[in-house]
Image (cartoon, rainbow, N blue to C red; front, top):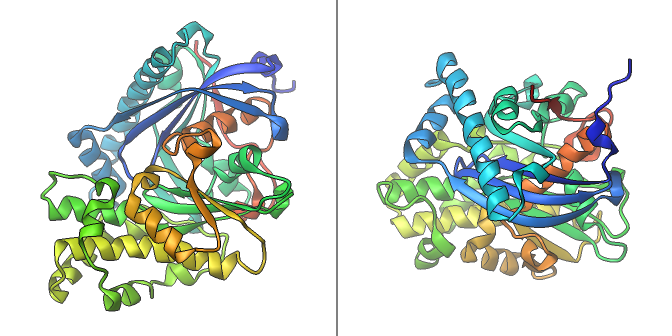
Length: 390
């Protein structure tokens, strides 16, 4: 018997997209109205809501993400705890948007990445879907990455499909840059087809910057608000040149990375190197901020410019609120118009949560929702597992 979900018959649906990224900041929820499916899908953002992880939960997730400190029982418990939290956040988001819970058709959850090993075809996102479905009493779509890995992809980046649907333009070439814990780009040339889209992780986004701020302030600050620390410092040019020698930056796309390469352990190693070099706190933050800028700009110059004409750089993610990062990008890429995704109708912080609502909608309609040109997969696939409440 063919797989069938009555929800697929609805042309207009209301969804809550949930995103919790590699920065381990918390949970973002976008309440959206979706019309249709496939490349003609239209998305209307009804509301955006964000809940930070408390310090204890964040510490537990960090420990669970590190092979040297993780424990199977702790991962199992955290998966349930996060699912309960996700359900609460989804309900709060709908209420804040003025949408009755009864009007919500489904939840689409990215889950919290604990470990991502694309070279082994393995990945783990937690936030148990069955618990989320029961707590919310809604259809839930989630666990997107494994199917892309199963067809030979990197399991990342996943947002490029939504970038293509939402931002493609007949006359303007666009680079969609998301700066979360990791920075990634989606290149959508003017009049591009799905198979023309290029996407990959460029390297660290906020991850090392955040770690340096936490280390330098003994945890009293968790991120560089508007780039204030970076602006107060001076880039250590010699150190930056050495940092740019990391082998990841020389790899060709498709490629993806995460906390396994550029997480806390790497940041602590760099912090110790800063001690040896005698670099001040502000200069350290300025230098790793420049690292994010230079790896993004370098990736575009190496892998995009000359192959695809692009006119605009559209920035989203938490890093879009870091003025030092945006100023650095404008200086490094003067040939591009650089602006936040807010100008295009989607707040910078909300774009990934919106994207997962769209990916979930495609899964409900049994439509392929990844781009092999972005992930390196052998073929298109329908990512996402659908769980029904009892």
